[in-house]
Length: 256
Picture 1 (cartoon, rainbow, N blue to C red):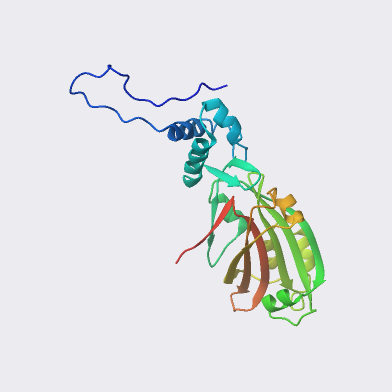
Picture 2: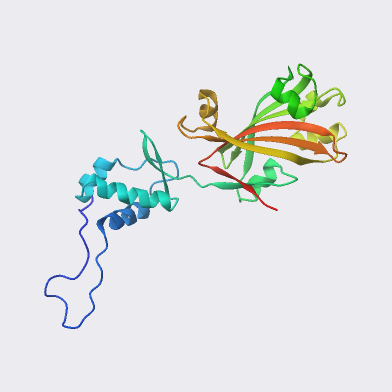
């Protein structure tokens, strides 16, 4: 158990006449510093839960209001996040997702010095819903290819993606998506040399139970949802994508 913290400052009678007095460090700030020093190599890691307010108050010999103020300061600094009803956690490293005209998952992750990996969840033909039909510019009910994937950075889930492709003008696309090492390679094999982002829409919502399980996040934390339309070099739509990103791990950036 940690020794209770005390206000620092000069002891009575210890200062010499005319000497300047050093301001006392507030208890909440001392606690915040102690908690921050315990985060990192050999200590608490991103996603780990901090001790409860009651436990911290007992360890430091203060009231819970003082502990709460210390935690709030760590939240403002981005070191800690609080989940209502669950407690306080070490904040995960957030990686910037820059919305560019040409965005590729592997390139995005490697820009942050992390190793990209992915788990293919499904590759199949489906009938286009109203949302997919609008995104691809095809009639509702049109058969389209669905490629679902869980994207990871250094083994940590950072995206849950559903990519939809029109199939009528691209024979062999579905099979290419099953065997090619990437979406870019699959499209290249059916004659699409390159593609770029035309539209990006961003919203937020709470995850479903399935999404929370795959992304390894609590259902109390919102997801960032990006709807994207990609076109080929001639401006024809080649893909409509819907991707979910954990808001604790990814932040979306728009740059000129």
